[in-house]
Length: 162
Image 1 (cartoon, rainbow, N blue to C red):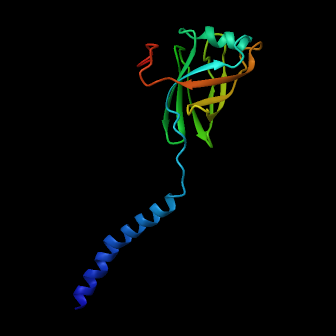
Image 2: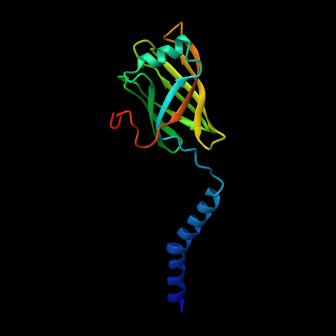
Image 3: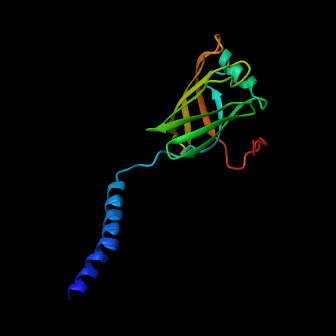
């Protein structure tokens, strides 16, 4: 009888405790919200295209437009500006806010680059990034409002793999 109760205690300790711990973790995890999905390719355009910053953004890329590739792992993102050499940066997304900073020369006329954008739901159901881009390396560009729209998975710009 003593042996049976000892085996039962060992079984509860080796099986019951881990199962109870998993159930507690699952219960606590129900209140944790996943960050919004921002991975993919986005076309970034200046809201005021006639400005110096808008022209600089359009001419800085070899494709005539700024395309950023976002890779995401939870709240952490890695962003590369396609067509621009050396333009990769890491950042985070929190409360639908994306913050990225490139400290090296992101593009010949830009130098350092800072992007802050918020994920917004459009009335037609699309999600866009709306925010601002700071270009401290370009005195005439300075601060400009930007908008980014996600490209379809199979884009027609020929940028796959870059």
